[in-house]
Length: 251
Image (cartoon, rainbow, N blue to C red):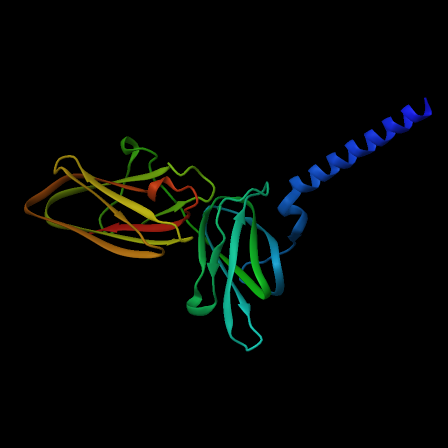
């Protein structure tokens, strides 16, 4: 009987230990968090993988810059990642960043808690900056939001959201010989696509970004251009890892 009780106690102890281990593993990022990271301040002298907790108060664009300082005094690249409040990665890739040429990684984010991850062998430094972005886009073509001529329209591709999500806009053109569309983006290294579509003119063309991107698209015709153009901004190939912010304008 004593042997049976002893066996049951050992089994219960193993079960409790297993549950505790599972809880600790579930905590993941939170268990390793460095508290109190402030915007614009550089934190340094880290090695290995480190996590930093930040609170975002509104939707916008997160800029992260990390680097390694070598014994020679030169700097080298470090890698960064981003996790949500539950410790789940919102970007499946580690992204390289460096102090050289102010090379940063950009994420579109919503209000909430995030964990910035940094990875490097030694002598790592990191800082972040947040820029608020007010977005007003449509979720489908029928719900497209109008962009007035020469007006900037800002938007974000939020980290962690579905790769199939699109932002829709429209512009109304009246008796023009040509139009130009300007698209400027900051992102985490993924590709952003811009589709321009006019059912009346049977015009349908897609432009694909390469990294951070400033681009001017133009369309001209021998006849006067008039009618509605629809603009769709989305992640190329529906890649959910792509994130960032952008600005649209047309003349």
